[in-house]
Length: 344
Image (tube, rainbow, N blue to C red; front, side):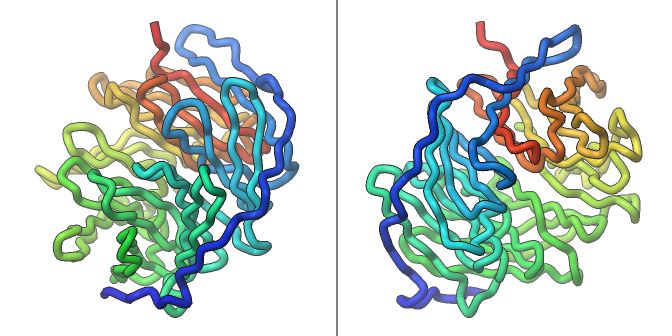
C-alpha cells in the first residue's frame, strides 16, 4: 500500500544550535586476553539518556541518538568531543543512519516521523508518517543502491519504504498479528529481511512487488530480534528469548542454530557481521554484557569479551569495514568501539 505524504507533513527547519562538550579520552577499555578483543568506550556527557545505535560513514564522526534525551549527537573520534542537536521533546529517537548522500536519517519512534538532518547546513527535514501510520518508525536501513530507505515499525506491525525525493511511503502490513517487526537487513539480491520479535518468524519483502513472505523458525519459542546476512546471502539472527544464534538459507530453506555461550540466560541482542563473514553479538542477559564472536566456517564461538562498562544492555551495532571495528551504544550511557579486525 502506497500512501503519499502531504505537503503539510513535509517540513524543513533549522535544528537548534549544536551544544558542544569538551574532549574526553576513553573512559573504559578492555585489556584483551587470549580469545578476547579490544573494546573502548566513551561516556556520553548527557546523563541517563540511553545513547544508542551509533553509525559512522567516515570513521571520524560517529552519529547516535539519545532515546530518552530527545537528541541527535556526534562523537569526534580524534578528539573525543561530543556535539548535540536537540530534537522535539517526546520524539523518542530510536535509530539513525548516515545515508549515501551524507545526510543523517532519524527514526522518530514516539512521534511518527522520519527526519533527515544535513550536518553542513543544520537543516532538518521532517517527514511525518501519513495519517500517523505507522506510528513508530523503529530501525532504518538503505537498500543496496541507496535509493530507498526501509524501516521496521514494531508497534504498528508494519514494514515501510520511503523514497527520498518522492516522499511517498509504501507500507507493508505483516499478516501475523503482534509480530513486532524489529531488526532489518538487505541481502545482496536486494531482498529486505526483518526479524519478527513477537513470534518465531522472519519476514522477507520483495522490493519489486512488495510481497511479504513469512518464514517460520523450527522452535515455537524462538524470538528473533536482530538480523544480518553474510556474503553468500544467508540470513543470520539472534534469538533473544532462548539464547541462540541462527541462520536461514533462502536457497535451501534450511535453518541451523547454535546455543549461545550463556545459554538460556544469554539474551542476545545487538549483532553485526564483519568483513570475514563472522557473526558478532552481545549477550545482554548477563552482567557485564558479553561481546561474542561466532565463526560460521568452524561453527565455533571463538571470542568472548566482557563489555568494560558493564554494558547494561547493548541494543544495536554497526560494523565499519575500513577500520575493522564495530560501534555500539550501551545503557551504561556510553558509545563503544570494538576492534574485531585489527589493522596492520
